[in-house]
Amino acid sequence: MSTLSQHSEGQVLPFRQSLMAVLGMCFVMMMVAIDQTVVGTALPTIVAELRGFDLYAWVATAYLLPSVITVPIFGRLGDYYGRKPFVIAAIFVFTLASVLCGAATSMLWLVVARGLQGIGGGMLVGCAFACIPDLFPEPRVRLRWQIIVSSAFGIANAIGPSLGGVMTEQYGWRSVFYVNLPVGILGILFVARFLPRIRHHTAGKIQLDWPGALLIAVALGCLQMVVELLPKGAGSTTVLLLGAGSLAAFAGLYFWEQRCPQPLLPIDMFRNPALAVLFVLATLVGFIIFALMFYAPLLLQGGFGLSPQEAGLLITPMAACITVGSILNGRIISHIDKPNRMLYAGFSTLALACLGVVTTHHDTPHALFAFYMFLAGIGIGFTMPNLTIFAQHTADRTHLGIATATLQSTRMVGGMLGTAIVGTIVSHSYLWRVTDVLQSENALQWLPQLHNPQVLVDPQAQRTLAEQLAQHGGQATELLEHVREALVSGIHNGQILAVLIALIGLWLVRRVPAIQIVRPERGKQPASGDTP
Image: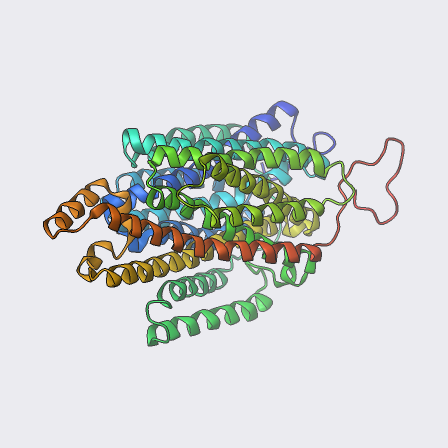
């Protein structure tokens, strides 16, 4: 089916078929959400077994980088050909890659498999999010159905950390990837059966902007490598060449997209101040989310010595309260005259949550840490759905798919940068503190065993180190405590940056133009110029 006439006010399908199609989208969102949260909880254990802490951040960035590239590509393809075939293909690729991740025997294998998974995830994000405005063109109707999808995403987020901890502890870390298999099968069945194929462009020759896609890949890939390599060799020829390559690719992308007849990233969207500030805010939110998601488990397991299951339980409030925040947001935003206030509330709450994590130490009550995670979840629930709603409300109808996809893509860029930059801060702060401690105790000979914190999440490595120290008259308990303190300090330094990012976001919210989605009083017509 290439086009659909509107079935009733605000939606293109009958209620039952709309419900089944939305359920299919819910399974898709759940699969992506579960993967993000269970991997974060299991990652310290994965690194300890596969022995590759140097690639800790790459487990996240290898997923995010191809996602960033494929999101706008498939957002545009979905506009032209309809989103249904790409959603089905994306579920298949994502599920297959999950199986390959579970079968990994080395960190390099895992990173490559995560890259393939990122391609599937980018296809999903590029197409699936835009299916909702396709099905429900009217904003108020769309908002009600969006709450269902957001709730499904939140439920999956809620069970993800605990599920990841339990499965890692009881069945091994590989099981956290295999959990995507049944969810993916259900998603394919519902999408194939109930989701219609809606095309917004039915005339004219279709040309995909492959040069634009290549320039995006080069620009972001080089930028990622610069972030990773700069602290290790500041000013080196390799870093300078990569930096120059990234800048040249970004400049080439800007000039090419202005001249391309069907650009992958329409520059006029970025010239729109309303959309541009939303893209920046999405980048900042992604930075904060991934900085918390991937380093809070390391703080709890490596810094405080908790088990994966205990860490998962403490992180669960963040994931669970994304649902709570999204539901509260949906109930509030349609009844207030200034929806932008919810963005102020969201960034303020995120700043408080990150600041709380910075003040956390070994003797901090677990309930207080869980409260910080609660604040983080509420803050995410108040920001992510609103950025999507505002972008869909602001974008031109012909750019609806690519605007939605670009918003998700910029969030992933933020996540990629957040994971890499915070990871670099953590690694170098940790190494500096450990070297200082060992030097003060004349024990630098143990630096090779302690140069990265994977020993802190590997009980066998700790026992081996204790035996070696005992042979030389050393105290393993005291030394490991100093090492844990070094890791905690490094993660705190990374979270300080997240606090600053949240404050920048709070300051930028004032630049978001006011929109109105509140339902007018019965019998009262919207004033001239009001947004319906």
